[in-house]
Image (tube, rainbow, N blue to C red):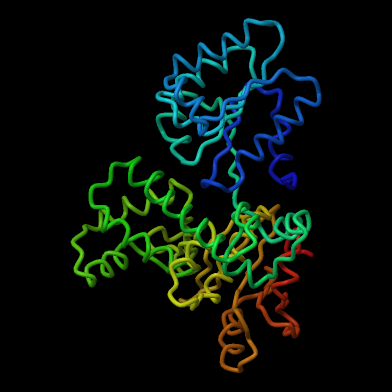
Length: 398
């Protein structure tokens, strides 16, 4: 497995800190691998390690509560109480009252690292109890640069088109056949929806929830409101309140299945929280729901650009100027960029539409258009970037 140095470099300065290192992200995005790589790095330095993986039945069957977890780690500490112990707890949310154990352990001579697949790790109750005694990091599925590196390690090639359809969950690249890969992605989807959401939140109206999930995940990279989802469910003869819709979408966000991107309106001079765009954490969630291989490459491409920009470290909003939408206002290190995304601008009508979004804007921000075209459509005021080139960039400056 490749080293995910982009994430590890963010965590490394906190190795010796008494802050709890919280590593979160969607199931099977590679959190455990990052944790393992940090553990190996510290072990190579001669540090004393304690590691527990709560997805291992032998571990989860014997350590089920905060008291049992605390006792186990204190036994490890007692062997040499003067030497710091580096404690790694993988998928710790499976332990009852795990947050109480973490609060207790951080007072010992330990450096504590924990992972989990639910943003409830950073819930109001948890943060209140820890009073800022933690630092969090979110791991995501592979971006294309990582895919290229991992594919080389596996002796394979993965095309940009493959990425646009099947996304970046690391494990999928280990399957040679498409049938096996799709079975894995569908099983992962089912596990996330059933185990990580329906069971965890005791959702009774399961069929309604599944309909909502399907609708949301194939509607990625589109302007969304709770009302629009409610109207769709109503058209499907499904009885569901707007409050329930909002609650269900929050569950998806808490499990890192979707991300919301608010609009910034120049007219209102503020973010519009009611209307947002939803992006899938991985475009595979869209593709496995499409019938007859009729993949939604256009919206997946915008979703992929979103994922890549987040990986690059940009803060993003949808930019709205005089009711004309620009896909992303991307900000980092005091610089802002206006980014428009289209599959192609070869056709005249598409070319005019995509460039028209920039027409009423001054040049105080760099204007960028990303498409899957091979030809360069740059103008004196708009830089055109080929998708294949963009996917290998470290930031928008090149």
